[in-house]
Amino acid sequence: MHELGIANSVLHAMQAEMRRYPGAYPSRIGLRVGQMTAVDEAALRFCFQAITRETDFESVILEIEICPLRYRCPQCARDFIVQEYVFRCPSCANLETECVGGDELELAYLEVEEHGTSTVGAQST
Amino acid sequence: MERVQLERKVLSENDRIAARLRAQFHEHGILCLNIISSPGSGKTSLLERTLETLPHHDRVAVLTGDIQTDNDAARLRRFHFPVKQITTGGTCHLDANMIERHLADWRLEDLDLLFIENVGNLVCPSSYDLGEAAKIVLLSVTEGEDKPLKYPSIFFKSDLLILTKTDLLPYVPFDINAAADNARRVHPGIEMVKVSSLTGNGLHEWLMWLERRRHALKPISAVG
Image 1 (tube, each protein chain N blue to C red):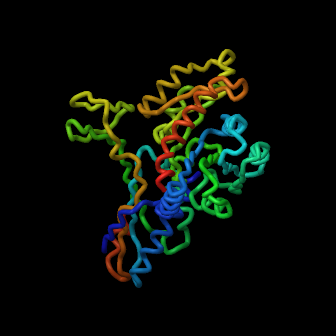
Image 2 (cartoon, helix red, strand yellow):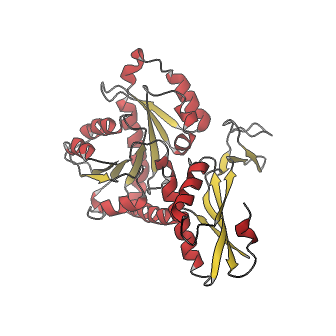
Image 3 (cartoon, each protein chain N blue to C red):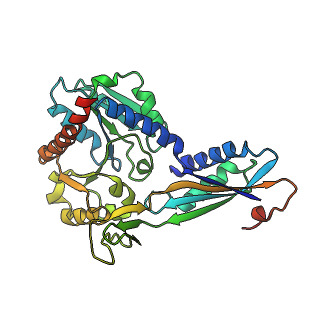
């Protein structure tokens, strides 16, 4: 259940970021999670909800973009999504391809709102 | 509404410490290996066998992680190399901060090789960089040969797969070729050795792998 530690890191990052925006509140946090990170989306959402309950971050919407395993063929200079662990280049059948995505565990963005202004972000589901 | 681009890693704090550790290992010419498997796949037994074969003057140390008890450290201390237990108290993986804290009172200039035996878990340790030169994954023949497909992350990230408990192959329905194929499917470049820590079969291949990796570090330590 390392998702709890990851959710905590997300919360700490939000807390640190919000210190730069006094008088505002966070409405949405965007994460990129690679397919190969062994992070379970449902468990991460559950942990995030649990640790933000009854805090200023309770209404923050957690957006998770799952990033597929992506390889690049140096010969064709093109990227392709790896399905069923076939690492061969779909164009030229080259096997000497390299990993360029799928291992992300990144904070992409944070949306902040001024108090008393529109709360569109916070109200959508 | 304002959207602030963050563009940084979620585990940036862990990764920052891991980078610091990696720089220290590099500076002192230490090969650090992060050993990962399910509970009971034979990490400690393999380390016992390994330490047993190394010369007494070898500059080797072990950090061993568990949720509770220092049983593993007690087993490994018999070989008179420095061994320290990291008891996580519930956490299912080691993180870079735990490694840094437990290394604090060891003189890194006295070490060439550091084994980190992670907490028995095939999932969570794969997310945490400990500053290691390589991850090593163990899979015992009493587990399923489809484990690489079920838990791809750790097989994808490991340089070496050690198939353990091979002395049991005559008694279990484990297709070792299928296991190897599955591991290569997830990670075509993964190296593999087959070991029985009980009989010592295959141990030589593992020690050769270890020696190759240690040797590859030598020019760096000579310059540094």
